[in-house]
Length: 328
Image 1 (tube, rainbow, N blue to C red):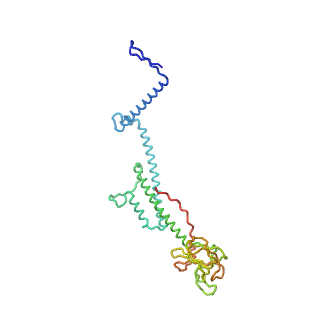
Image 2 (spheres, one colour):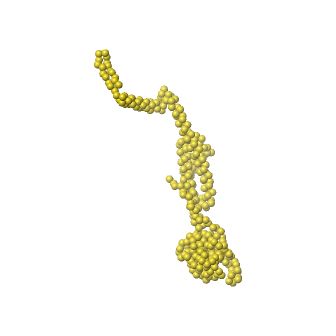
Image 3 (tube, rainbow, N blue to C red):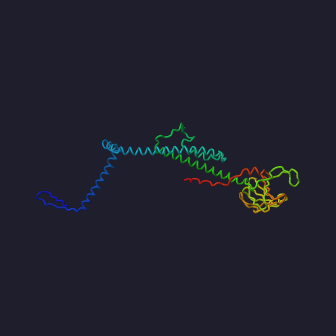
């Protein structure tokens, strides 16, 4: 392609020759310059005019972008309404959870004094808590058209309430575990699977034929049948007694102990820690006995009690507690 440039009829004509690629390059450069110029004009002139309210340009710009702004506002409002509805549902669930927490607190024997530190922190963190200088109140009306700042404040309050309930249920879990451990220290597991034939109380003595107090339960079984600990505890005695024969005694704490008489052998030593259901001895007929059986006693502060009352409290094994949510 050739361009002829002249200044007059008598002037010398100049010739410019361009290749195809040069023309394409010039055209591309021109397009880029036009786009940059239009962007600069839009940013520095039209947007500035819309923000500052220029007399002529501002209404024109707003008229052009009105539909776009309206669409963005509609989209934002729909999202805020959806977030507000979801937040309301979470708040309703949290209210039910708090009511359930109050009922569970009574079931796990948590006293009000133990909750005072948590309640104090919760009340102090809550906006409008009693004790402030400015009195506020009135009915609560949910937000129908919430602003973003209001939603953020509601979410922050919901997060604080969630942390409070997490601490509360952690306390409940700890108390349940403590209660379960205490139950495992109560002699409520039968030492043998066979039913008892002679109960606690007065009976005719098999040797003298006279009425006498029977201080335990008799479990008939063959020689050598394993005897299991009725609860977790510590071996405090293994001895030979004229009446009990080969006897084993376990201490379960809080003044509670169990005694296993007429054993043929004892398989734990003094000072050993035994768990609930562990094999500790074997059935025999040693001492003052008419046949092979286990004489089982429960003592509280050294005083014999009816073992049947404790065996009726049979406690299940420790459950696997669910993993707690981690605090941030």
